[in-house]
Amino acid sequence: MNRRVKCFICGRESSLISSTLGICVECIRRDFKKIKNFIEKAHQKTRKEFDLPLNPPRDKRGISCHLCMNNCKIPSGEKSFCGLRKNEEGRLKGPYTLLGFYPQFYMHDLPPTSREHARRCLEVARKEGLKRVRVGNTHLLGNDYKD
Image 1: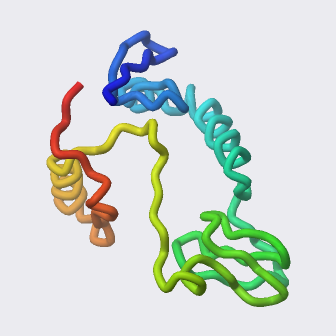
Image 2: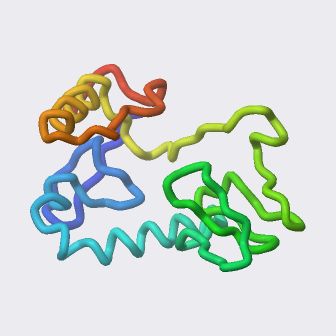
């Protein structure tokens, strides 16, 4: 499925533009400050559709979750920012406790990054001195980078 989407900023069409966001990477890079608000609104809309918190929970009496870098403090009856954990009666519950592994998912309209592109990004990050960078979920990467 190589559906082409038109960037609503510059009008460029590409299969690498998410239909959810509708902005090409070039426009994002060129003037991020100008479109940051739009990106945040699209992000919030998507989080609401998936019944996820708009921000990582920080409840003082919540349970700490260390599953990811968000370090949520989840209040009773609420979900973590990623949606994989829930505070049920003072105990963290989630797919790991039920299934023994963490399920993985992705949004179907996002184009896959190619393995080659991910490799080049990792190489640049290391050249810049970044040490805690890795490529995760390699099974979601595409084999080619076509536009």
